[in-house]
Length: 198
Image (cartoon, rainbow, N blue to C red):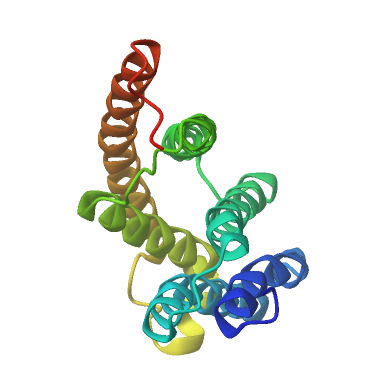
C-alpha cells in the first residue's frame, strides 16, 4: 500500500525535491549546506525502503514501480539545479550528461523487459555507481561555500565532487552497457518465442 513505511520513505525522496530547489535558490552557504543534508537524507532512504520492505515482507508492486522513479527524479533534479545555478564547470557537464542519458536508457529498457515479464536485477557495480553518484551530487550541492560551516573549508570540496562525478559516469557507462547487452539478449529470446515466461 502507498501508506506502508517503505513506500512513504520512497515518496519522501520525491517530496524532498521542492525543498532542495528552495535551498539552492537561496544562494547562500547555509542554504548550500542544508541542500546537501536534505539530499543526503533523501539518498539514504533508498537503502532503507528496500531493506525494510524485505525484512517485513511488505514488498508491493507500487513500491517496485515507484522506487526507481523516485531515484531518477532526485538525481535529475540535483543535476539540473547544479547546471542551472552554474555550480558545475564546463568540463563536468559531460559526466552529468552521461548520467542523465544512461538513466533514460535504462528506464526504457526496464519498461521493455517488464513487458516480457523479465526482471533486471541490480548488480553490485550498479550499487557502487549509485553510491558515487549520490556522494558526488551531495558534495557538489554543499560546494566550497558550504564546507567552512562544518569545519571543512580546507578541503577542495567542489573538486572532490567533480572527481566523484567522473567516477560515477565511468561506472554509469559500464553498467549501462551491461544492461543494454542483457536487454538485447532478452529481445532476441523474445523474437525466438522464448522471452515470455508463464
